[in-house]
Image (cartoon, rainbow, N blue to C red; front, side, top):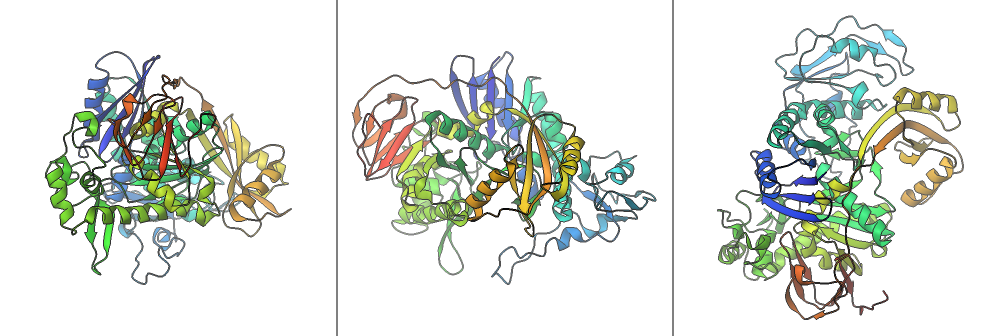
Length: 610
């Protein structure tokens, strides 16, 4: 059975095909107004007929939320808690910004409906549900989130009876305590559900009935039915594919610690590998918490299409606004006139105008120069310097700010723009090794073909670690067989650490707590919630070794397809391929490893026994 991984990005849609013997790659421009159109086109060009299994990742739900193109949602909640969506945790998004205002709630006050009912934290019914709302005020999707429904879902299920609209129950989606996070997640799911459902129906039609799986934010795959019912789980599906690929790469090469640096056309996603990439339930998007398991990542609005401009104070800014796929950077020749990061690279000669996109897309150097000249003379270097500072902050947010020293890690840059910035970013962070994987511009699509099918469910526990009866009941309520995890914390803390459940769980929690926070206690551990993860391992591509070489390449431009294992690379050098460009900065040296990865080192000669 052939296997296809598809990653729909803001600028390009990427394809990886494993035919049982070899890996083939393909890339087409994205179609933001109709994302499935680019998918259909790419499949037609790559795989015109025959059966195939498809694993698909996209940012459709994310974009629908960020651009406020979701459904008109009605919220049914416990009477007296209608304003919880606005009250939240009363945290200021930017602590020292007195002009900061919280994001607009996804449900206006007129469609937040209080229902007379009350369930206690122990699951006992305190006020019986008298009747559910009879009018939904013109909504086309419904979210139901009652107080303490994680302990007893009966009222939510009674209220759902007779509703014939897309519906999300908090007790099904996120049956855990913390009412605000559970409420926000439920509302967000309902908000993007109709959009995702329409897209997946259209996608199924355009993929001609082929076996289809959807990438989810925890690094696994799921069915289209689950993704349509719980689209909040797909919000980071594209970046999750890249993180999965980096995990496989690090295990194959015995790399203990790495920073995955995924820079595409519109944004950058950064994650940390330390024997694996951690999951978190404390994610957020656009100021809204996401109380479902997602890979722990930090996202910044910096990409190849990020637009450079001067702010009101005269300072040069780059991003988060992006030229996207249409019209794209000025050098694309599609009408774009604003200077972008990609235009700056073209002006500096780091992207070859005749070889970009495998020669299928000729770049307009004059248009790039005209756009960049709006900033000023010699502006290309300034644009990249500001971009580098933005990228440095993104990496520091998930390393230095969490007690990690980047110098102890290997930087793995990928995405269409990542390898252009890898060496410079590593220098800024005190890192001395950069590993550019094969097909870096398509790594997220490759990761989707490497992902397992994962089903994950959780339940609230809220007890001490020694209360094994309560913990056992929580696990049993999930009704799933698989790996077990617990979200643990010390008494008095507000946030948890996910820890594998089993003998030695206390020691493992203490180890993880010490790694993250610098200390650990000997007692007072609480279990907040428990999780069971069921995994089905499917067919995966086999990454083959490449032919041996040993040639030394001088400075200049090199086609990656001409490189062989053992080849040595000087600097400065540009390595071109049809899905990305790698810039080897002055002072760096490189060698091609047995699988075709570019292993780059700063200020160090390469040795054969490395």
